[in-house]
Amino acid sequence: MSATRRRGQAVPTLYVPILRWMRGERVALQRLSARAKVDVRPLFILAPKQFVGKEATKKHPAVAAPNVVANDIAAAWGQAEFYLDAGALPSAGAHHPMVHIAAACRAIGLRLIPATRLGAPQQYQAAVAHVVGMDHRGVCLRVDMAQMVNAAQWQAHFPFPPNDTDLIADVADNVQNVLNLGAVVVQAFQNLHMGAHWRSVSIAGASMPENFQGFASGRYTLPRHEWALWNSIHGNVPYGLGYGDYATVSFTPPPSGIKWGFPINARYTLPAEFLICRGVATTGYGSIDMAPSLKGTPVQFISMQREVRWRIVGRIRPSMRSLQGPVRRA
Image (cartoon, rainbow, N blue to C red; front, side):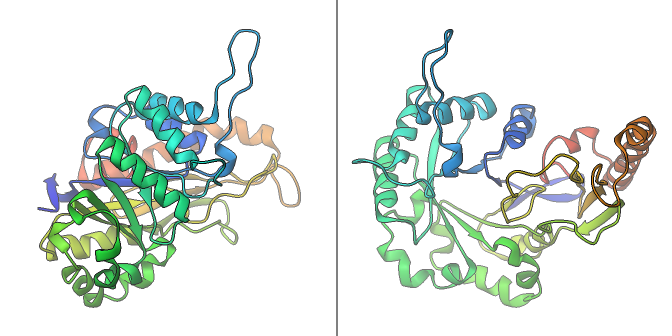
């Protein structure tokens, strides 16, 4: 079975949120209840700017970058299993940083599963193999659709057997185009090479726009194409199909150095849509001064809460804890 039934709706037995290890994501993970973490295995993508140590202070000794990463993961996710892709980190010395991160995680009892891509640098692949050999938890392999369809051409050369590999077919921001293929994409998953022999198979993607230029302030709903795609496939394949997404952000990493006064957009996950509450700029041309906006916030916020409650409770009637997690609880 690729899904369970909750309140009449199919729910994946494995949910893989793909996260860029931003502070807001870490805080959100930390606030999840134990129930909301069941059947969730996040994939953290680590960028070079996030691999930084802490300097010594009068009260605390210096902390090396691998230990900072491990401590942050422990604080946000605890000892549940997670995937980590550190392929973007540059190699330095005899070992890739992934080896040191895994050692730091191992020392405090974290359950890391290394994630990789077919075209990852050789030194990173060697580091992944080292970690798999040390921890015996297998590996996560993220492929695009073309690589998935052609798995018969590369699977025999991949250094890990299918029964030790969690395969994620990540369609990235092409999810609507893939969804439009209809029966063709369903057939591709039905004919997946070694289909039922993979330890797990998941499909992931992101349909959230990179930005909301051209959207006036107000509330909008956008279809969740990645959720529709999973629903179109999961009941038609001879193996369990997990679900992954980029939560409520776009596939493209957010820009750095966003200036004060930039419009902030609140985003919520509904059963089949994203609810977007488009903000306004508080500085520059066409901006609205912050003081009147803040005075009106309580009324506007209560109105938004009522709309979210109506859209969720009025349609599928779960508890308000649906807002706590991404799509799995919707």
